[in-house]
Amino acid sequence: MMMKNYRQQLKKGIMATVILKIIASKTTYGYEIIKALRQYQTLVTKEGSLYPILYRLEDEGLITSDWVLSDNSKKPRKFYTITASGRTELKQVSAEWQLFASEVSAVLQDGSEQNG
Image 1: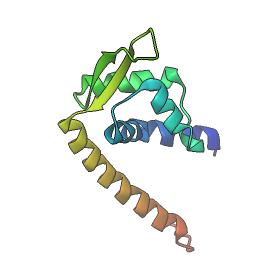
Image 2: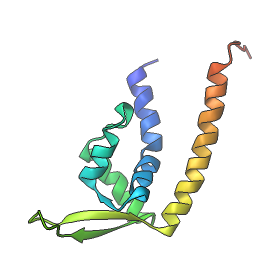
Image 3: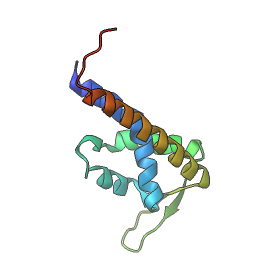
Image 4: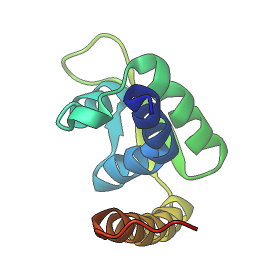
């Protein structure tokens, strides 16, 4: 099994939820999201991967965005905020993920090999 491809597939499947969780914790902008993801080795993401996810979350009504001119910057930043629908979605997907991860862990920790 090619581990790199396996990791990429797992990451691709959960990144929207992880990004939604980061936005749920505080209104934030793209670079801040990237910095938050850098805290986790397997979640490091480039801007080219982040922004399509943000656009999709916004199109689905899970987040909103506003351009804000900060005091320190001459350029406005696009800040993202989770919506009520986004909070509901995050709660549901998080519960599904917890169940999925728990069951996969249980299977992987089971010492017996089953041939079927």
